[in-house]
Structures are given as structure tokens and as C-alpha cells.
Length: 109
Image (cartoon, rainbow, N blue to C red; front, side):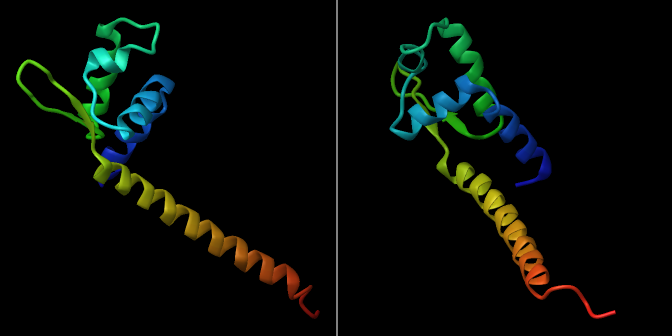
């Protein structure tokens, strides 16, 4: 993923409604109407949030007769998770090196 793609995806996930939509879609495909049911928001507002998730590549919609179910793109979530894991490994290595440095004690004058 490019830096722009990461920025868009993390910005999209910064909204609690969009995170809830991603969590719901992790359990299976759903229409905008089905996604809107648990929220005190209009279907239009949910459509807006789905649009943001679509534009950053986390959700796709397809036609199924008259229905337009949304599907979570787990491959894109995997790319985000990979980036997060890479950052975690980098910081784990840095903290391990600091821990070793502190365990070695002060350097001789």
C-alpha cells in the first residue's frame, strides 16, 4: 500500500461509525439498510460512511439483483495489519536494544 492509501484507510477507520461498520462486515456481507439498522442514523448517513470505506478500498459493493451488498475487503485489512506489525517489530527491536544497553550497566570511564 502506498502512503496515500494508508493515510486514507487509517483516516476512514478514525471514525467510530466506520469502525463499527467494518466490525459488522467482518461477520458477513450486508446492505446499507442492514448496516443502518443498529444506528440512530439515516440510511443516507450510513451510505456516506460506506462511500468513505469504499473510496479507501476497505469495502466493495456489488449488484445482486436489486440488492447492493457491501463486502469487507480483508486483503486490504491484511495490508494495514502488516504495516502495524512492521511498526511493532521495529519498536520491539528498539526497546530490546535499550533494555540490553541498560542491563550492560554504565560504560567504564
